[in-house]
Amino acid sequence: MKIETKVPFKIQREPFKNRFIKSVGWSRGSDSYIISIEAFRSDFVYGYFEVKAPFQLVIDIEAAEKPSSVIVEKEKKTEEKKPEPLPTTLTPPVPPENPPSAAITSPPPQPQKKAGPSAKGIKTIVIDAGHGGLETGAKGKFGALEKDITLGLALKLKALIERNMAFRVVLTRDKDVDVSLENRAALANNNKADLFISIHCNGSFRKKAHGSETFFLSLNATDEEARRLAYFENSTSALEGQIETDNQDEIKMILWDMAQTAYIKESSQLAEIIQKELNLLLGTTDRGIKQAPFKVLTGVASPAVLVEVAFISNPEEEQKLLDQEFQNNVVQAIYRGLLSFLKLYS
Amino acid sequence: MDQKKILIAGFLALLLVILVVIFFTSGGNEKIKQSRELTPPELKTQPEVPGEKKKIALFFLSEDDDLLHPEEKDIQAKASTEEEASEAIEELIKGSQSALVSPLPPETKLRQIFLTKEGMAYVDFSKEIQDKSLSGSEAEMAAVYSIVNSLTYNFKSIKKVLILVDGEEAETLAGHINLSKPFAPDYSLIAQE
Image (cartoon, rainbow over the protein chains, first blue to last red):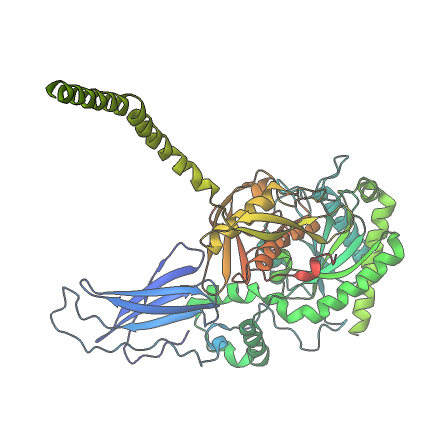
């Protein structure tokens, strides 16, 4: 983070437990004070006013669209322990005209080729078995649990891919354990995933709900996010050297929050191809490809889809999901989808 | 003459006594009684002042398709949008009055709705919205958008909705749909009647 000031300073920082503000830092210069507020999100606006006796600067921050870190240089004229009055200028915060990305952008967890992954480029496929552990997911009328079916399918798919393709397959879980949604995306990114496939079974209030569908992430992207993204796509390498290590954590988080944004096009293609294969092999109703804000997909820095194989809440489909042959067909369909997707990029 | 005067005087005195007696016994008491009885009915009339009703549409599920179906409902007009929106959400939790299905667990309590000037509604639910929630992406989408659309459709000042659980930002209802970002309405999920 570049802070423009002529005063040499060192910012002390303390965590500020709030879902909006991450930490508050302060520093004393020769004729000024600096307060730095680090936020978890970048879309906010702020205002400030002064209160006299004792002097207070009150900063109001609320959701909107502005850069992610506000630095206010603050003069103090009424602090008791300071005998000399100081010049009374309130330096404006970092001007919003600055490209917002300049302050907070860093290279993605793993740099990607613009053209999308070539067949040669794809080396690691991450398969995510939905739910696990205490988090059972949806339940069937006959007692089938989503977490068990997704794990079975993930293990089968891993075996099938490894038998026929020279790819590394990483599972987000290979047994019945809890894995947080963020850790699933983190695991994919840390393993430099080239593709991410999450397997789920659907659940509905309507007993009759049935069919298969494939999702990719819906972008509720604000203009701000889009602008930031465009900037980060265009100048990744230029910025690489400018980032101070201290801020790495914050940067990583912001980027992972929107990591999937860069792969929406590939993700939609992958979804389309897999859904086509599911329709051919499963004999279930085609619910099509859809977009939804799935938490597990948001942080994945590669093409990523979520397959809702069938409705476990529908007793008929629950039986299918428990059937080995049906499971083999599901895995076969996803595998064929992967093959077709790879051909697109070879 | 004297006798006549005494007679008249006696008559007048008697008349006066009678009038006084009448005044204090029947008539006067009745009037006081009446006026006392009139006070409570004045209080009674307060609820009778017809509060303005407001027609809103709440969005529920139907067994027939995976769309949200509007159901009309009268709510009491209130001083603030927050109060009216709270009543709308409480009615949504109570469920449909026809054959439609509410996607929210009936045990859920609405803790608070806070509306910003920019049109962001923070809707804070009790833990039951997660604990009793039906898992599944369709179920969660239905729950989220019944809330979001029911608010944005009826209250023009609400543009976006952020769902909180127990006063905190929540990750998901049951493992699928991301709640950490505000939702804009999605009217494509509404059935065209």
